[in-house]
Length: 222
Image (cartoon, rainbow, N blue to C red; front, side, top):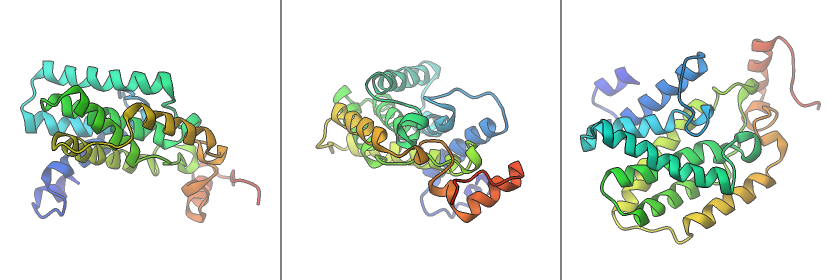
């Protein structure tokens, strides 16, 4: 991705691709057993760094401003954790990457000088965009498709932040979006909640990868 960026011929622009690059990098550190900060979970840990790397450069954020970004994101995350869930095992990937994306959108707005209400609007839009996202890690490992979903989380957050700063609003308030996410998560079947038994994990290629890694077919009985 870095080499592709350097060509200067991207379709989505260098700012977005820098977010992509940093989101992937963080998750690959996690996948290789490196040290990361779960924000809010290890599986969604690339989303906030993807956002923060971009706005640090774009808005010339100093260290204190970066810390405020993290505190703002954490405050929104605490609301989600207390009122719904942040784990894929209980709510699907919407609860992990969806929450991380919404947290990052709200914090990005705050860093850009937006109002608390605009942060709330960005949060609501970002989470709404990822409602229903299932958790289906191939072979039960937090790598495929998790790494690239963090990319979507970062990009979704940045566009949601821009929409909020432009004055767009979410017709459904943030608290109600969180409630909807909780309800959807509770209704997802167990095969789509981090068990590695449904979705992409249950495809022929997903099962083949699982067998390649573990040496046996651990898929659902047909």
